[in-house]
Length: 359
Image (tube, rainbow, N blue to C red; front, side, top):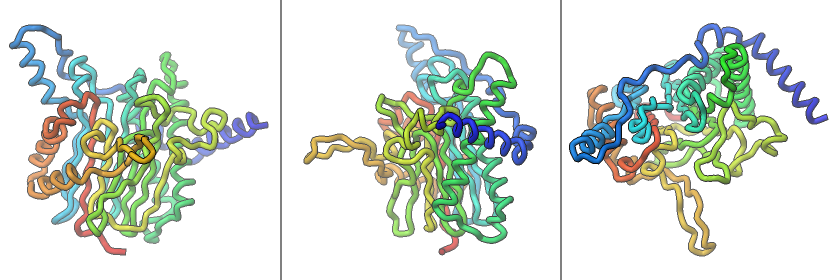
């Protein structure tokens, strides 16, 4: 009986995709091949000169996507998706991706995706996640007339809508891989997905997988906007093409004690919002903490103000968009000990809203 209802649900979902979202695959080249990488693998060599050349290359990663633009006189968006040191050594392109869009006055959409290192085509998967999520969120807003009606959904409504969107992305990727018939499976495009929809009445967030997302409140307190989905094994998580919505695979659709996907509908205007892939978390977030009474390590999941506040001050003092992105890359890559040690690709997206409307 369970199997029957699972099959029925997937049939209804396929019909829903076919009838309402046909234009998604027509307007977006889903899972298109990734851009080529200009730099070649770094060859290990014991000679000092070649070692210096290698170390120098590690400080200048490939930038896959960058964002730097003004939102108003004192507000801006700045972000980067860049190659990790391990990928520079191997000549592998950056597998992270992000997207930022101004939808309307006071309405902004920020999306981050981290391709799974274990997948065959993670860079294509992360880009597909961002492009499809953007298209479907904007379609939802238009169909429901949220902007026109200045509407802010309830927590339950937002969860239902975003869960549907995540399932549609999953189904589209599955269908596209079958159509391509090139030997690849949906799991070969495994990638996480984080998104934040900022409105004049508050913040709407959703995520599936790991990474971090948080905001600076009006009382200047940094707060988290998500709990990363992490498995029992180190560095394990879930991805959009995974069977996260098949209850026989993941009971109760929960991981790390939160729902899959996890969503928030927060009626609060932020001063700042930050989204990032897990390649940035070790030096921007308070992750592992020790509970002395219980003799237990746990994920505190608190934005690290010791990094974020100085970063924000520096970004605020740079007026030129190009200079701001260059400085952000420098800080993330070599500005901290943790940044210098980090081997993974990094995506970091920072949004400031100094002139945001008060609820």
